Length: 338
Image (cartoon, rainbow, N blue to C red; front, side):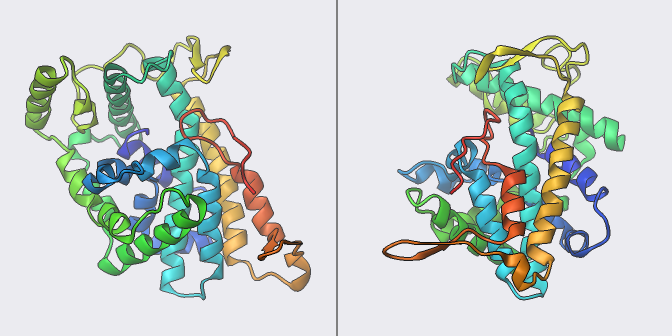
């Protein structure tokens, strides 16, 4: 998961590429919701309730597979809503969520390739993973906004009202239960993760490096090395690794496709992800906001013994085509959309 600020800046850049219309208006009106959506499933990683479930953390499900299907389920629910504040809010959230999907699936192969190319999945590698993402946050915020990470108050860009939090929690619960029936998410779990994200963003900031110092000491005593410390948003005097952006275009490999040599830099990966994202957003707006005629709908029905399944409108199929169904870790499309 590229860190909070990287996702936020990615979303801001995409917004400025949008033409005036219902989607841009919705994001402008609910910019805090949009910014929260850019964090995708990550809030579940920071929610204590998520770790009490025997079925596992919802964020793990969503990062591994079928996130494209979840986004389609979300988009269909938005399209079915009548015009109004709720539809605008959930449209903005879905648009942001797609940004997380595109950026993670583009960047994660690089981050894993630089920090855990053998996919050992040990805590040492995860620590390096988190530190690299913090390096990217620091550098991108400086380049894009001329700001120090310690001066960027993350919690202020994801402010939402109680009504918006409730809408999003209900929305995520319904869509997740459709796509991940084995996960069986509960409303309380969704509501807690949504409503507490602002608090966790405050706790992860470390203006004076006090939290980072204590966390590092504690982790070295427990694990023998740093681990979660890299999640704390603190400006480091030097990057955790040489050339974290790969400006030298040195070879790196996607651990899920180790035979292929790649040389892209982080800005190149982000530009490619942004192109995909803009196409996704156009398809989302068309599906959720365009009033279709009967000819446009072009419904294909497949009858089974229990129910009739609709293949969806043309706009739905275009959105499905653009999104794919990629893992946020490998970036590969498993092709499991039904």
